[in-house]
Length: 327
Length: 257
Image 1 (cartoon, chains in turn yellow, red):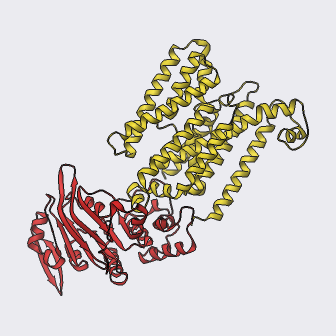
Image 2 (tube, one colour; image 1 turned 180 degrees about the vertical axis):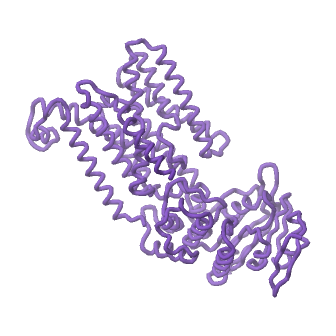
Image 3 (cartoon, helix red, strand yellow; image 1 turned 90 degrees about the vertical axis):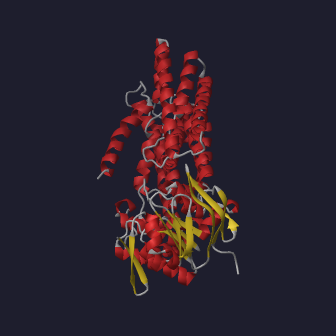
């Protein structure tokens, strides 16, 4: 029996987990920061010095950026899984990250500054989104299969373009390109946009959460129960695409958060989107914060791309879930 | 007093390359039960989806309690009519109770959660279909017949005035076939519900329905009282196989000759 009290309790626990993971991430690093400096950096008290600078200028933005991207990806994944009625869907399945990848590669090839990379990546993501939407809409049917196939093909095309750019790119630019493609938070120095996007997109999707529950059971059933199916599906597609575009623009295509987190949360708390969407956002954010902390501390001072770590965690978890499900 | 529960005016329904019905004028009043019969592929499901307002008609209009579906918001329609589809697919895990509670959706506000009252309605519906005690089972672990009864319980939970049922007896054993038909007969008799359903057993259609609609699959259809339409001669023609009628104390059963 879905109940509001249980939902609030679970969300409070996940909120606590998010705060703890951020706290941990803030203390981890080559420089030991005293708790007085930490509090000062967060605005609780007076203080100055290198510790405060490191927290305010480096760790806090990165932690917030990681949290926002993880939350956006998990939210987008949860929405895509309902939209396609397929538990194996993820935010990238419809080619949005592919489009962003092409944009970012072009920007890196041209040697554009960070703003240019982000701008072109976002433009690529939106371009892919519009392309898939337009093509899948062609005959007006807009079925799950048609949408999925169109998205997969567009993603494959973008993958080919990315490979093409990689193969002609000069040696000196390859490392930056590869890091972008694997997902990398070291460039995420301006987390405000991603945080605002997370809050806004979550707030926009929650009013439709119960309708999403019905959509997950089938389009005709949902329609018979009073859901304006076409309108709601377009809205979810738009929200999920925007969430993915913002996350990918901020941190590159970080894998598996969007696939595994909604899954894990669904297993733990059930498939009620009213709880699942905010819970997945909190859990996804926490996971990415922890993964990024590991990425920058495991072999410090060298940094690993965080996408590699999420995939390394994600693959075995996902295989385990699949093996359990088939029983 | 008021308009019939369901009314079609000059309704034409098409499936790709073929017409299912043309110029169908149908009225279903409160408490009436209509059986729709025809061969596989005759367009019964398509017609039913049109009658439920889930598919626009090729021509003419369908009115629910006097208002055309075209002018009726989906949510308004959902409070008055329930539709049972042929297949129940559950890509995601869900308990039986949650699945049945979905029927409360049109009665809940945007931010509302299911109340204890809604849960009571859902439990009553489950009990009415002999599913009491299965509330916490995962729907994916149910048998085909149990899953079908969960879908029917969700319709009861919706509390509509009109039931549009596509093969409500699919996957059900004999015992449950009769129980389900008795249940809808009681809903029609006691609550004035209207029922339009696709049935494959003309004997059960004769026993449980006032009227019948025969779909020949080529655009021809016959509408009339169940007693007049469900005869061996007409059904033999409908199914393309010779049938024999056996009369038994006012009931009429049909067996393949």
